[in-house]
Image (cartoon, rainbow, N blue to C red; front, side):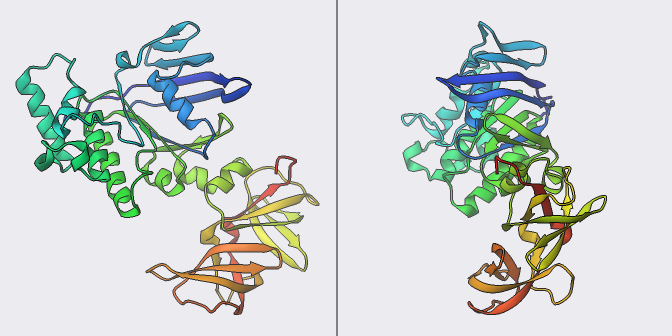
Length: 361
């Protein structure tokens, strides 16, 4: 496939109201040409409303959406979806049940003015690319869920749009198939050079796909950056918790260094990183990442615990443990420990982050 430069997409101060509910709340987002952006957030955060507004399915009430130099939505101006040079892959596949796989894909380029020979060649090429050349004549009812989603993906990219939108396309599939299709989505999207916005509530999916991740909450993007920065330097408590924690402890800051602080909890002192401003004597929550925990015999950041549950994960065992300060999950060890065993857990200061207590917590 020939690379095609993706579209610069800008969302500026976008708001969308359903009655008094603000599904989008003065939201700002920029997608650079050819960039794969993932919006990560819980149900009700506004991510579906945003992607539908970009597609032209919804009309924003305030703000502006531009593709390159062209305004798509602002005030009374609202460009129809079919005139936006984009394609969308839905969670529920959205295939025509009375059309074959080949006909579903061909429908996406029906109005593009290609000759019959060119159109057939494009459809054949893209179905082969997603591994469905041998099922071109099958109807959706004759295809598995994964095969239907491959047809939907082929239909989206066949015309090489400048913007691809993905509305949680893998959430209906089993874990193994999700991983394989994730790789196909990533590869095919980058091959055609399209800009992409992918929405999900799955943290592992977001980190695996994204050039940049935006964490969305209550209609606004709280932080957007490279995946590593989002994980290592969260700027809000919500961003830190939604990108993965094994548990949360509460304590008082006793001393502060440039990057670290020492927090007192009962009779224990734990050292942790801080990514926002905190003060000595302040009450904080310690957000413990899953990778922070181990049953190491050495280290200062150690507290007593009791094994409450154990689950075999193939590569080893994940443990849930009870401490005086709360529950920790996902504590990995190559050896499975017995429920009720009393042990000590070590907490890596680099992967434990202190956030101040606020009323919103």
